[in-house]
Length: 288
Image (cartoon, rainbow, N blue to C red; front, side, top):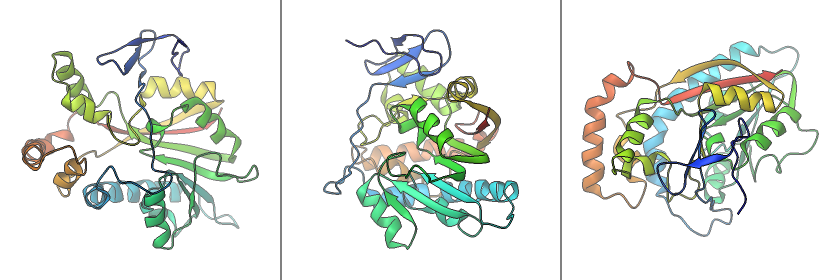
């Protein structure tokens, strides 16, 4: 059996809280051995995509507007429209948010979701990163919105980003944070045998589960191994009461009763989340 190593520090990984959970004893990296089974053919639907769009739309579109505005300020027009690649563009919400300023391109491997974006007239190329790109496809910004944590070889992905980045460009990774209050709470519950929320945080049973949970330290180390430097870090909101029930319910295995109960608890707690460690972080990397 091949020994699993930490992508951040190369130290062997130990079994964590579940048979599929891994953690590094040298640094703070956490990973999983969950299997990825993306619907690249478009012949099945594991998740309820209608509820998924309803559940995530409000929160993600709000966060995407914030990121698009910040990137627009960083890349003013200088005789040409700056180029932006959205890896795992899903429904195309970030392409819409950034399209007024950037020359945008999206990549999406899930056939059904890619069709939804293309049907709205968005430039979504079906395939995986970086295979869907030509060698001379270069960008000012390469962004991963809730995507990097799903990519099996995260170090190879970062090295591919470095190859496809124009001088002065940047890589933006918007992903769940290992240090967030929801993740830490789910870990605590799993440690006493209550694993349901921990499984959901890792999206166990989903076609594209989480394979990594990152923090500032691991992102800095991963960037260094790929010839990149961690430039800045910010946080974003992780919970929106609007659409919360649909967000929980798009997993077909969750009953309506359980979804209602979870929605009620999170809705009551929502005002507190702004005061607690954020569950979404945005890491920006540049060439070292």
